[in-house]
Image (cartoon, rainbow, N blue to C red; front, side, top):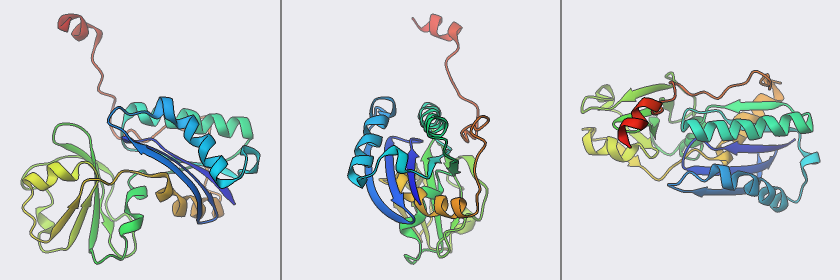
Length: 228
């Protein structure tokens, strides 16, 4: 099966094409300016060219559903739904945190904990088993303090994601390692997407909404007027 994978929940705008679990092509770029709106469709074109296939060869669309950037998730979801409608393809949705852990499974860590920066001291996170890669705690928005994850002090833990840097500055976990240059990636969606495709676990395209986890925090009109 050939699947187009889209992941736009973070600073990393990422697109991949796979045939089964084989990665055919990956196009991605990490940008502090969140370039999803201007880069996503170009990346899709380049990924298709790199994989040497066309849109009509696809069997499904896979999307990193969040949590993460509200705007990024909206852009990714709109694009994925557009492809599904236009090509009459099923939509597969995978938790964006899942896409971060795949390359670290069986690397000697008991637990893998993605931390997606949600501004200030808040992160989006979940806990994954370091051997199986299975999620063993629910995805949550967590405010970090010096006592966060203290129950894991005796375990060998790997924290990954752009929220890991601020976690490292305040957590006192002697057996923990931190990698802050890891972002949700379309290539990390492949395994879960293939499993869901084989099980025919698809989303209702018309009613699908990204996994925002919490409400969008915008600036009210009155507040904008005051600040001018």
